[in-house]
Amino acid sequence: MYERIVLAYDGTKEGLIALREGALLAKRFQAEVFILSVVPDNDRVALADTLYVDFVGAQVEGYRALLDHARQVSEQLGLKPVTRLVTGEPAVQISAFAKEVSADLVVLGHQKRSLFQRWWSGSSGAYVSDLVDCSVLVGRHNISAEAFEAELIGRVELLAD
Image (cartoon, rainbow, N blue to C red; front, side):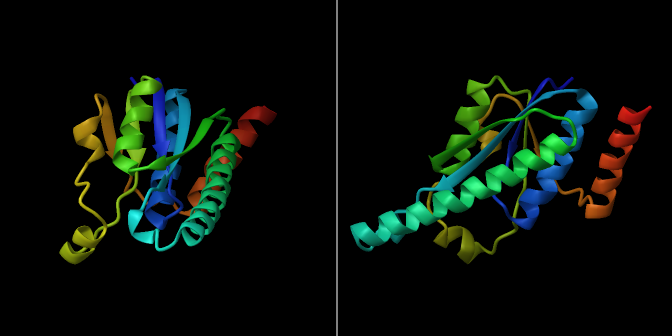
């Protein structure tokens, strides 16, 4: 059913929930995994060129660390993810990447926001589901660290048999 799954990961609690759920789903379907992290391109931060460059540089390094963590989580399940870090509007970048890799499914997290937070976060209004040609799963099944570890142990036991 799902052969190519994109996991969008931003390091939030909701992103981790989606990462775990998506990685386990990919394992069960023996799907190829593509992990994408998007550094939001935020014009409001550009108060001065040097401040903007310093801020973006720090953001990129932070997102690289997040991407490495996501890769490690996937590899623990025996997956061999392809990873990519990009800068831009998250919905647009996720949909472009999904199209590029011919994804069957995009898995992402979701943070509930107030009306004010949605207004303040920008006018993009772009939703991944409006921009992709494949299924979208909003990961909300909170898989505890213990349950995820049990999946890892089960994999180790299978390899030992």
